[in-house]
Image (cartoon, rainbow, N blue to C red; front, side, top):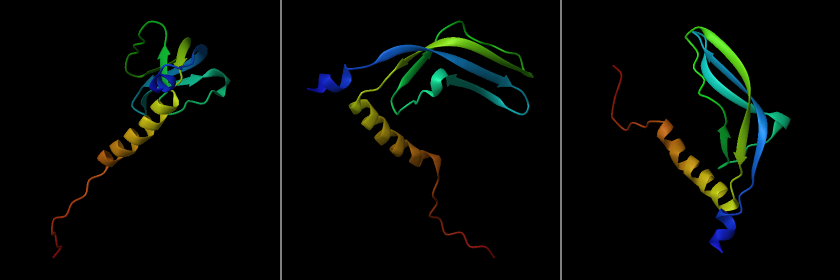
Length: 101
């Protein structure tokens, strides 16, 4: 029964655009899939091709192929739970008694 949720994975290829910038204004690498494909929790994407390295101060855009591996219902649920628990690591609470004079 569990195999129904984990092994029934859809895998397909799609074209994508990679935008990489390494400047004083921005340091990012974004992948945009063609056809405005929706990525759901737990999905995996593998972009094909050689590693892209750009020197500081440059921006580059490339076209590549990517393989999308859809997550099954169990993987989607687990990803949602894990992300909610990991979200708590982003904030810090302090219970010290600090009074301003």
